Image (cartoon, rainbow, N blue to C red):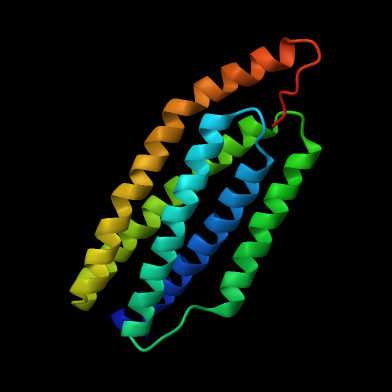
Length: 169
């Protein structure tokens, strides 16, 4: 049987990998956006915030005498790279990328809510504090993306209908 501390450490390793995946996904997506400057800027800003989140999660792991999983981190980065590359093969990359980012933010929200409960059960107030600090950042990004998705879709449709105008990204 696995104890609460062991589960917490495993889930923190998962969260670190998730943040590494987010960094790759956000940066590669932002790099490809040429015609959507507000979305690009927001993704770049959230990428910086995500780097700090990964650092904080790494600190929780180190405090617990553990390290991030190199295998989980590498797998997550690979998945994000493949997702970014898939944008090259669709005509509506910006819309699909915005939907993917919105979905990913909700996975992060669920992860941090679970980590908060696990940290409480483990009596790890510092990890709980860190996760409670990260959670509203993820919620804010998800809310912003929810507001932007119709706007990005309309921008894409207008650009797509205009002659000699790049709409994809």
